[in-house]
Image (cartoon, rainbow, N blue to C red):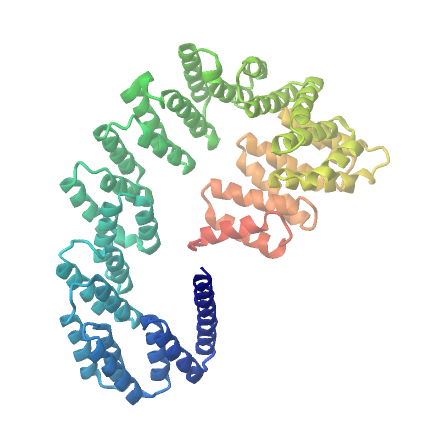
Amino acid sequence: MRIFVIALLLLTSHAIIGQQKSKLAFEYYNSGELEKAAKLFEELYKESNFNKGYFNYYIQCLTDLGDYDEVRNIVETELKKNPDDVSLMVTLGNLHERQGEIDLANKEYKKAIQNLGPDPTNISNLATTFTNLAKYELAIETYLKGEKLANLKNLYIYNLADLYRRIGDNKNMIKYYLLVAEKDQNILNVQMQLQRYLQDDDYPELQKQLYELVQSHQDVPYYGELLQWTFMQKKEYDKALRQAKGLDRQFDENGNRVYKMAEIAVKDGEYDTAIDAFQYIIDEHGPNSTYYIDARRGLLNTKQIKVTKNYDYSTSDLQSLKQEYNIFLSEMGKNTQSSQVMFDYGEFLALYMNELDSAIIVLEQVKGFGGLPRDEVANVKLTLGDYYLMNGDRWEASLLYSQVDKDYKEGVLGEQARYRNARLSYFSGDFEWAQEQFKILKGATSRLISNDAIDMSVFILDNLGLDTTEQTLNMYAQAELLAFQNKYNEAFTKLDSIMIIFPEHSLEDDVHYVKAHIYKKLRNFDAAISEYNMVIDKFPDDIRADNAIYELAELYEFLQKPDLAKPLYEKLFLNYSDSTFAVEARKRFRILRGDEL
């Protein structure tokens, strides 16, 4: 036992010494002290049972030192000992090449490939040696011959895909990456590689090869999946959905693939494709599908977004959507399963139909359902509080906000509740208490809440001391409440009164800013643009300037006027670099300029 322990200690000590020597050798090599590095690599090679890695570094040091005769002697000696180690022939060829003897070098390279045997280790070593010398065509030739010698098809497809990429042969690169997909049956990594290396004009070749593989491998789903993916990369959503439907039917997927694609289409603003996808699940799979209810909700939600997002809707559009909501709730009933649709319906009634009483009734029903997730109930209460406030019931709104605040002392939901209560105090004219709450919420975990709280805190602080009676700030807060309640004419009257009673007041930029928001909601975009420009041009140093610049740029993007949006984004991140919008403005500017992010 004692002898065993001593032997183990000796081995451990030897290993530690070897690691230290190896580390020192690489330090010498990287710092250019090649003579010292060569000596250590030679020792390590002999002490490590002739580790090929140390040998290669030893030879590299001697070659870089110009000791060509010594290198030739060492390599030829090693070749006599190991005639099957064809990578030594490459080393010898590289030596000829360094000396300008190109014909002799190529002769050694070809000789190495000709003498290659079926041993997988030798095949890999030779190909790796060529790759390290950036001789990619010879590495490809080595792998292809190696597959034949080993009589194993597709043995080196990963290596070949990478090598064809390096030489710019995208056709073969695609071929071998598709073979990787077939071998692994996991296409995510292949998608990542293709997305990284393919240019737009490479996709037709990829699609051509995929069409051929789909025809010849009809029982395999992943080629069809990749074809669908290529369509989505090219934003050809109609073709992608057609492919997804085909795969869904062929492999009896119960709508799973089509549903996932519908979700992506909604995020990308491809609403017609999403509607088609959701409708397919409803019609093709029916109530027995696990995606049926989600598809019905997704269909309604997408139609609502499509109708309302662009502010380009008519009363008949809204009435038609309202009828669809009622048909769904009539068929499915009002219960926990349909609670999300009821929530969406309440939002639709409140914000677009101006039917606040009906919206409140719907959300009160949802709030009363037992068994809903805790977070869902909290969201319902917060939204319901907003609707009560819009309807003029401040006490009920505050009660609901406070309930969520009490239940969520930590986290975003609690922060949202505290922000809403602070905003309610601001609307009510209790500015000092509101300002203290906004000040606390500056440290909110939610960046959106934190930014809004900072804006409100600074705004109130700047305006509290300007008027001893706080009359102007009270009028302005009342105007904001009226705008929140969608009482736009009354809000305009209140805002105009401020400018008449208190001309050239410090709140003038804020008045124009709120008017811009109201005009935007009313879809009077010319008036909104005029008000934003008034803030930007007349009050460039005031608190609303950066907000106005960013929101006007967004509006121009929405109106499909990128040439007007781009200089505004540039102005924001150059002249207002401390703004919370500066980072996003730079990103939007680069996108509009056509940069690849």
